[in-house]
Structure formats: structure tokens, C-alpha cells
Length: 613
Ligand code: M6R
Image (cartoon, rainbow, N blue to C red; front, top):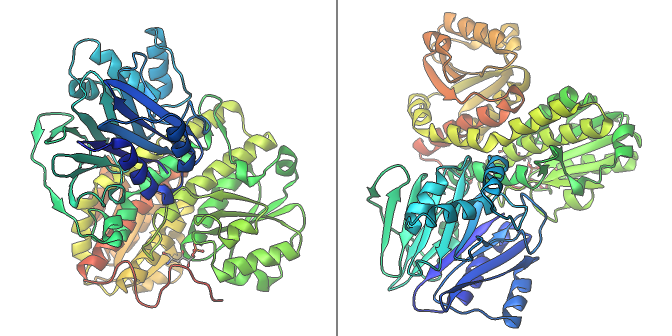
């Protein structure tokens, strides 16, 4: 996953940037680079591969200076290569940029810039940013002003850091949305900037975190923060403890909340490396899915535990709807005991964040024994479930520390959506127009998730109302039935409140007896093909005196007339609603547990990786 480090001050910037990038290595990356202002000239060194490669480049061709920026890149647009690695220089050689995030409208911006005579040197989306900045710098704007103007054109979430030889005394950094953070470290007569605090913590504990739509102008002695929409902003300097764990938590009290907020970034990185935007095609190279295998598959069994199994339930619907391949979903602890019918034309797809869950591994062994093709979707690189599979998709979430899985739930949802498109494409059952539409919808995901996260204050109000409840019922239908299961699991595991997730249509067959004034009912009712049915469920719960908390799409005024609380969701293409509907439920569980003063990250009796059967 991408990382950024920058330095301005009296020391040599090169080793500081290299060290900082090293501290972000654990996030995973496939190329690295830096740009340093040497004798008023920007020098760039970059290549595909690890930091050791960059270090060798720097030994062969050293650069030294007092201002510089560096980047580790996880390929999104364009393969890992020297020309696609960051930093990216503009045509004049006077401006250089590093960037985290996806420029959602880059094709459009690239065409516009090409028409103005700009020549592109890479396949990246990032390059449009540097050319836009140059466009405004050449019209005599200052660097901060040019950055501000350039950023107005970008869609999506971004963290960017810019350097210009025209204004060598400063670094400009900005954050839009949640494509990772931007933190400025304040030293004595020197300043640091990074995407993640651990990169600069060895130099300073005084940190300023940029909020969304803020821009920092950093000189060696001063920091000024401005809003991208208005004037100066009063910033707060945080004194951070010298503790690597606390450092990892950054501005958050708990890992779970941090990880919930990392989802714009993790989903951006989940999508980007796998989509060929121009051809509207999905690439999942590590899956080893050939057209021949795709055509041969008769059935897919998805197997997983807990949260991962809920992702699998959504996957079943997506693969069946998009690729028209039959899918069965099995809880891993049950799979091998039911003697499943498998052969070489069946796929067993295991989903596991840790890749070490004993039940899931046992299910994979059973599949192997019976001759099925084994796939996995895994977060931990090098884990068992990755190693023993014939093909895999690695979640691009970075480490998940909180025991309650959050970002490692939404990433496989998106992976399964992409897998469904790829399968359909290879089997020849998806026409080009439909494929383009599905991929265009996919690109909306990071922004939609960002919009859900922005509504955290509304969720906190509901959390306060529910914090003393003893029970809670979650209802969902269709593609959001698993969301109800997942919302209930999140609440019970960290708040110890008894919660049940139920298929909404099943309520009348039993659980309706539980509904009275003391039973809050969380109803997941986005505008999807099951909306009308869900609406009648709300009325049924209301007429039995239940307190209804509805998750509904912006503008759905009807729902506010019946629900006691509404948590609003951005309008989302229905196949992707499970990615947005779960975000408020993760936040709800988090805030209830935090308000109850519980150990959110390490709830009692639970482990992050369940290695016993
Ligand atoms: O590592 P895995 O994804 O295989 O773990 C599966 C479950 O143990 C896990 O999802 C568990 O349910 C979490 N505590 C949910 O938050």
C-alpha cells in the first residue's frame, strides 16, 4: 500500500526519506522513489522493486539536498515500473508530486491535458495532478495557489505532497477524503510530512494531522494550514507518545476505529491494481484463472468463518447474478463433515483475513483431498490459506489489528464483485456495455464509503440511545441479509450485547414474538430490489412497539415517517450496497462498546486468529 515521506530542514533529506519509507514497508509496495532538490534542480530516483533497489540506485547516482519527498507505490494505474513509480515530474521539471489515492476522473483530465499539448510519461492517474499544478504555476500563481486550483479538478480521495524548484523553501501537502492520512511532524528548525506517523516518529513527537480538504504549506520553520475551500485554519499540535503501538493508532483511540476509517484507502487499493480502466477489464493475476478453467467450472463452494463467511454470502449472490455460476456457501467448521460433492470442475474458495483459521484450513484440506481447485481470498501475505491454494486474491487492506474485523470484511466484498465480473467475462456471459457499467460502479466505492464515514456523528447519536440495551435485532434481505448478520456479530463481539441478525422475511416465522418496546430493531433498507419488502418489515416491527433504527438512502422521506432513528446512506448501485450499509453498523458497534468503556480492540474470549478447531 502506498506510503509518503517528506523532509525540509538543514539535514540531508535523502537518508531521512529512505528510513521513513522503510518504516512503511510492512504495508506492502511494488516500487519506490524519491525526489530531492539538489542545487536548485529536482533530481528523481525511482524504480520498480523494493527499497533496496532504490538504495542501490542512490549509491550509483547519489542525490543530496535539504528538501525532498519520497513514495512507496502499490501499483494502481499501470504496472510496477520505473516510469510509473512516484514521484512524478511535470514537463518543465520544476514540479514533482507524490500521491496516494485514485483520480477517479483521470481519463477525462488526461484527454483535456493532452489537448493542451501535455505529453504524458507514465500510465498513472497521478501524473494528471502534476500537469494540472504546472498549468496554474505557469499562469503566475504561487505553488500553494496552483495546488489548490489543481485539486479542484480531482474526483476521489487523495493524499498528495508537492515540491517545486520555483519555490524551494516549501513543501505543500494536502488531504481530500480518506485515501490515507497526511501528518506533519514539527521538529526544531526542520519539518517532516508523511502519510503515516511511524515514518517520522523517530524524529519528532509533535504531530499535526490534516483533516479532509485541508492543505499544509510547510517551510523549515513554520507550518500554515488552510482549507481548500476557504482561508487559514487553526490547527492542533498533538504530542504523541514514543510507543510503536500508539504510533500505529495515530490520532485514534482504538485500532478498530482507525481501521473503519482506513476503508476508503483499503478499498481504493483493492480496486485500483485490478482494473484496466481503459479496456474495462478485471485482472486478478494471482488467481491463475484461465479462460479454459473459467469455462469448465460447474460450481463454486465458498467456505469461511465468522465475518469472512458473511462476505462469502454476499459473494454467492454476486457470482450467481453476474457470472451465472452456481455457488454454495458453507461455514468452514461444517464443510468437511457434510461430505460435500466435489470434483475437478468445482472450485472451493476459502475466505480468511488471517489465512490461519483452523476450520477454514481444514475445509481447504478436504477440498484438496477431493480434487477440487482451491482458491483463497486472504489478507495476511504468506499465510497457510494463501500458500496451499492454487490461486489467491490478496486483500489490500494492510494489517488489521482490532479483533473485530472491519476493513477485512469490505475488501473481500469488492474482491468477490471483481471475481464475478472476471468470471463472467472469461465465460463470455457479460457484454461489453454491462461490464463497463459494473466497473464504472466499482469506481464509485471509495467515495461512497467516505460519505458513510462522514456521517459518524449521526451514528454516535444512535449509539448513545442504544448503549444500555440488552438485546438488538438486525434485519436485512437479499444482498443485505448478510449485512444484518455482520452488524449483529460486530455488536455482540465487542459490546457483549445480545444481538441477532435475521433474514427480514423470516421475522414473522418466530422472532416477531420478541419485539416489544425493549427490543431495538435495526433495519437495513437501502434502495435495492428488496426495498418495498423491507419497508413493510419496518411497519410490522413498529406496530409491535419496537424501536426502529433504519439505514436508508438519502432522500427517502418515507422512511423518516416510520423509523425512530434514520442513519442515512449515499445512493449506491445495489450490488455494492453491502459495502456501504455495513460501515454505519461497524461504527455503531464501535461507539456502543466505547461508550460502555469496553476493551474494543481485544474483546474477552476472542482471538484475532482462531487456530483451534
Ligand atoms: O481470520 P479469519 O477471517 O479466517 O477469521 C474468521 C473469524 O474468526 C473472524 O471473522 C471473526 O468472526 C471476527 N472476530 C469477526 O469480527
